[in-house]
Length: 392
Ligand SMILES: NC(=O)c1ccc[n+]([C@@H]2O[C@H](COP(=O)([O-])OP(=O)(O)OC[C@H]3O[C@@H](n4cnc5c(N)ncnc54)[C@H](O)[C@@H]3O)[C@@H](O)[C@H]2O)c1
Image (cartoon, rainbow, N blue to C red; front, side, top):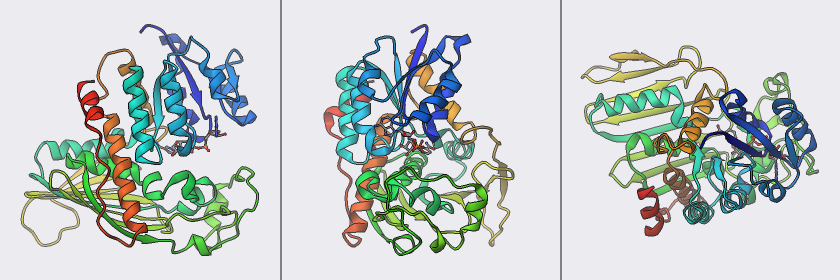
C-alpha cells in the first residue's frame, strides 16, 4: 500500500488521534470526516484543510472508494454497527476501546473482519504507555520470577465529571464502567499476566452519583466545564449537570482467575479526590509496583530480596516521560496501525482477540456484580474465530 487515505467517524475528544495519521508529505492523509455535529466538522476542516469531504452520515462516507481505512472514534455503543459497516465496505478499521459494549457485539466485529479480510486494529493505547511497557519488560526479564498475582487499583478522581454527565452513566450505552473504563485496565492485567480471565466475581454499586447532584433533563450536549469548575466541584455529591439516567456503578471490586492460574483483582472508584492507577505485580521471586503512570516523577519500584517493608524498593526504575495525547501512546498506536496496513508487521502489541477478551472479562464481572457477586465465566471465543485470528 503506497499512499494511505483515511477517514474518521466521530471527531470529538478522541478525534485528535487521527491527526497522527495526517502527514501528506509522507503519503498519508485524512480525506473525509463524518460527525453528527456540524461544529466538529468545522474543527476537522481546520485540521485537514478545506478540501476535506465532510458527512453527517457514515453510509455516505463509506461510498468513497478512495478510502483505505476508517478511524472509528464514536461513543462505545456505536462501535459495533460502525466498525462492521466499515469493514464490510472494504475498509481497514482503527477502532477505539472498548471494542463493543457486549461480547456478542465484539464477536460480530471479529466475524466481519474475518469475512471481509480487512485489517481490524483496536486502540488499547495503554499497551503503549511507558510505565506499562516498562513493567512488561521487567516481568519478561524474570525480575519477579513467575507472575502469580496482579492487583490493579484505579482511583478515577474525575469520574463524576467524565462518566456521570452523559451516556457513560446509562448502562444501555456503556453497559458498565467496568467495561467502559475498566477494559483498558483488564487488558493490561491480561497482558502483564500472560493469560485471559477464566472466571470473575465482583461486588459494587452506586454509592455517590445516583443519589447526588443536579440532573440534566435535556438530552442537549453536555456543557463544557473549565478546569476551575472541576476543582470547585467538591465533594463529588455537589456536582451539577449529571446525566438524567444514572444506573452504572461508581465503585466496583473484582476478583479474577486467569486461564494460566494467575489471580487478579481490579478495584475501580469514581469518587476519589485524586486520580491515579496502580498496578502491583507479585511473582514467586519478587514484586513490582508503579507509582504514577507517566507524569513527572513516575517510577516503578521492584522488591526482590527478603526485607522488612522498605517503601523505596530494592530498585527504582524511572518511567520515561511522554508527550502529547496519553503520553505518546496514541501516536505509537497510530504508527503501529499504519505499519500493519503497510504490511510491515502484524499487530503484535494490540491484538484484536485480546481486546475482545477484555470485553468478555468486563461483561462477566459486571454480570456477577449485578447478580450479587457469584462467580461468572466469560463467554469463550468461538473456535472458528480463535482459529481465524491465530492464523492472521
Ligand atoms: N483510548 C483512550 O484512552 C480513550 C480515551 C477517551 C475515550 N476513548 C473512547 O473513544 C471513543 C470516543 O470518545 P470521546 O471521548 O472522543 O467522545 P466524544 O463524545 O468527545 O466524541 C464522539 C464524537 O462522535 C460523534 N458522533 C456521535 N454519534 C455519531 C454518529 N452516529 N455518527 C457520527 N458521529 C457521531 C459526536 O458528535 C462526537 O463528536 C469512545 O469509545 C471512548 O470510550 C478512548
